[in-house]
Image (cartoon, rainbow, N blue to C red; front, top):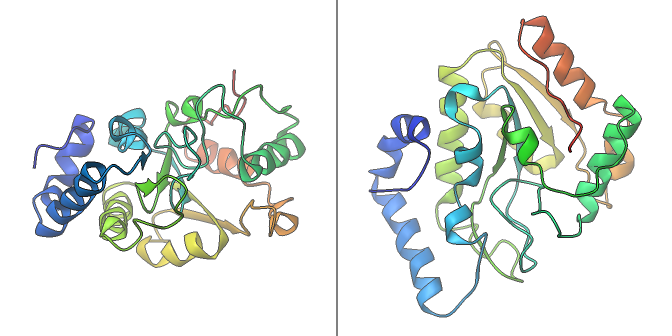
Length: 223
């Protein structure tokens, strides 16, 4: 299939794109659009995480579940919103933890492209959703695809730092070779579990693990 995605990712994922299940995903999403439903994120942003973080540049992986369902919120990077859109509560709690952990004050926006461009791969397990309808595309095959993405990262790269927040993300640990990579786990930054998210110090820990390998740490400050 001719999927519009960054070329280094296309090279490693072409086998998945050629499988029948991926054609089924494409057919379903197009059918939703033809039926007049609004898809989040907009089609041009579905593979934004891949486009902003080429395969060879990935060094940290943050896993989300599915895109934000509010109109205009999702733009293909987990937890992120476009500039000018109010940061949702989970993202606000991420910023609070960064301030506690690293002394970096809350930014003026919630767009995480600055992280993605440094090698932080912001992957949702499900890449599309209908506006206002949480998990509406959770059964169409996206998880098969993104599980393959995680497995390929695990198999073909070395020394990645995976940040797994909440039970959903933590269940993906079985796809990761922990002899080759680092896994940091905690509760989700959602308001329902943030008391157990706060204090995880994952941002300073991730940078320490990168520096330990001679890799450039992430500048978590957003400008």
